[in-house]
Image 1 (cartoon, rainbow, N blue to C red):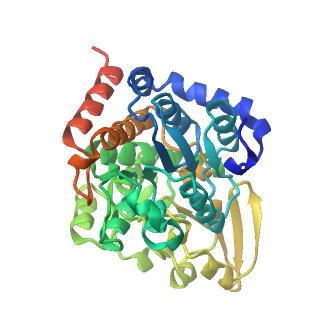
Image 2: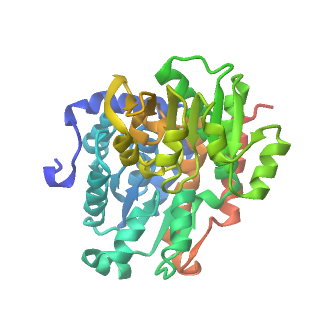
Length: 402
């Protein structure tokens, strides 16, 4: 039995409900099923502890089954607003995973949970936004881990940007999952694009057709969101500061404009940038009455919620996952999920099959680090091409019928 100091979750009694969710996901993840079978035989992670920061939900649970059956000891935390509490409980009870995560956690809780993960002294880290990297590289408490960790993965654009821009002294190899074309195109464009629009439609129960939507950021995720909104009949305007990306959006048939000029008519504003303070005081002031605002980038701070609070007389939850802020000017702004990732906090995240591919990339990347980390340079770098092609072939074998 696990001691309570080895996990911090909402309710262990949710475990039976959680294992059903994990099993449902597993039934639709044939790539991970095949990897579970192989890893259980070969034990590539035997004797290793893997510290993870990734959304604690059912698809992740299938991935952790693969890692644990492959011999790894696992400690994991998620992100604010995205944790499925029943999945967290199932991981603790049925897989002996150390889980530090709750759906209602604050960002301060999140950082504390990241520290809990690192206190398990991982040999490898799998990161999501570079928070684990930052703590090991900057917090004196975890300095000793700099000589313990043999390698890492990073899931996101945001994390990759932080590693390349803010932490130039890298002490181990980090494979950037988001550098792969399969992650960018299949998971980001199709998975994120679909799940963001579906989550907004489901949570609000309002019609998408005919709405004026502003999508901020036209990277792989943003382009997917814009395309899915357009597919639902919305009138989409794209905002992007990169002239080449803006030109791409124009050639794809989208209206493009500067941000401030688009806000006065927008029904929905969705930020998909992965940087801080994309929407601030001047933007909220320019928005029309009853606009809906959502974050599909990464950190909550992509939207300056404190600035919105300072502009408001009061706020209240009007329906689950939607807060109404009544501004001092009299207009209302509806914010989804406290600016947490909308497709996970107001929905179930990317489709199961899409994450089957994405988590297979993670699995084989971690296996590469476990078995051959010394062959990799101590820098952020793409996943080896042969791994990406192997996963793409597995997806073709399972998704395409002949």
